[in-house]
Length: 308
Image (cartoon, rainbow, N blue to C red):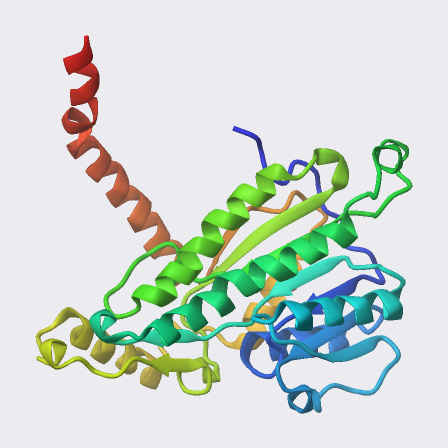
């Protein structure tokens, strides 16, 4: 299997960052962290409505951009503006734009499900590949001589939901699981000589407006409304956690963790569960999967035994 992220990544002191979904939550916190603590970095902050970026200070190092990740023309226009502003330079991309779609899967509409996948998966994939085009050397000669692009880092904001499936969020999970598989595959396509690394950031609960401002809900289906149904039980549990704040991380802490991953000067891990809850649940998921794998060993080997 082709390895991913084979070389250490060294974040330039004047790195150019592109962050999507900067109107609130993790995206906004990361923008504020960079502009406050690392003002020598250059920042392209994006949102569907550019007026939502009015919190950013005025600086030649900062480029607020309108960007709708579901629109290929909008992405192309944004990258044209980036090339013009920073001479084709791009060091770190953080694909953060997204929202949750929850509710009874049987009641989900075609429009709701397609819009969710367009934002969570296809939008991040489009932005990532535009970034790879800017980050990689433009010819084999440039790659061999080290005179091409300087490589870069693409960080895709996934979620614990990209690894663990829970009731009532099927299409949100679908988008994040798609992003996980796509990122792992594309990371293995990169030539080691390009110096391009990929990273999946997988937070658990974050204290943001995600549960209100960035959450869409499917209309309830009457067959699933009993309080004993799995989705209703989970909703109650999640709401209690949100209200109490127990186990929830602040967006500022997530932003600092993202920057730390990028700036350590080491090989970039392909996956980083963020928060002790995420780490514990991912560990439990893998341990459970190993037990399930052992339990189906006889079934897995049956076709081979029949052939021999």
